[in-house]
Image (cartoon, rainbow, N blue to C red):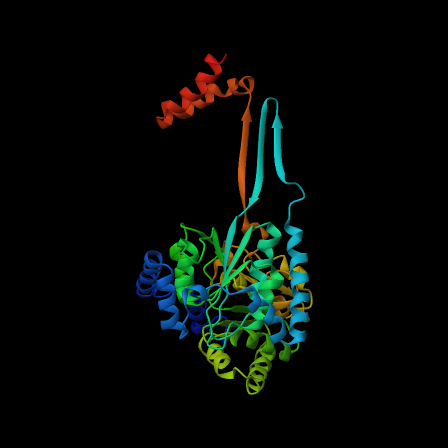
Length: 432
């Protein structure tokens, strides 16, 4: 893993590359994804069966696209008992945290004499959750995506996940049941996104699609936005750790590796003012990688995209953090709360040496579906708020409307919308 120092040419070049990480070859990718989406929209279930055979190597018949309740019940017996108990514990903690987001009142209201202005919230009716099923099985993602939707009051939650030759992971199915998923379909890829967006004979159309996936899934979500809502276009996993010499190098090395093992394009960065710590962490990474099951993936990520940045002080470290806007930020310093005040762009912040990013992935409670690729500059973690919509209610009496007639006239004369003024004038001057 490279060590770069402030003031060096490579230091600035690396930071520029990190800031531009959201850019990828979209055009060539989009052509293939558009073709799959259009085919799914036109041929529905037939297209889903064809792509499932082509991409997943699984032969399904139309009646087998949706999973049967008996298959979900059997998953509890197939999954390790300890894992099922852990899923229940995680579901409880995630649900408890997201219930904090429920508004105390069903409405917000402003009342003036003769005027009532109110905003009410309504849950979305049907939401689709995409759960990856390729390189790994992530029951934690099922909990993180479905539980906030259920807490928000979404009426129906549909889950899609790519079929596997050995069957869908029992942990995925158990997590879906614990989280309150209503229906599960064994379809994946861009075609699954198309099915959720447009609907087929078997798969109902949803109002919003959430959950991470590979670059084809991410591109498909971006292309169907507008037909449905989406949570975000997720990129590879990211972590930035800021540390002084107070945190053991072994802790920091393990945290960087924990994200690097996701895939070769994951981004893992340590920022520190300590040359000694930088060298110790680099040595620890080498040692810990030798014992890692996914060392090939993690090593490729760390060598290709990772870095240890040696800076002048913690103030400069925080300036770089806000430039990068990472998905996960660890403040492994002696006074993390003080440093947290300087954070303006990050998906989730982990405070102190005993709060590893990994606990946030599974059991802490806050959501692990977070903005990546610098989008933490303008977007937020998935939460209850993402599954409700706001509706404005407005009421005027005639007496309350009359004082606004002249103001409306000024607007309409400037904007050339005479009918708008007439709609007000008819009520203030001709009302019975």
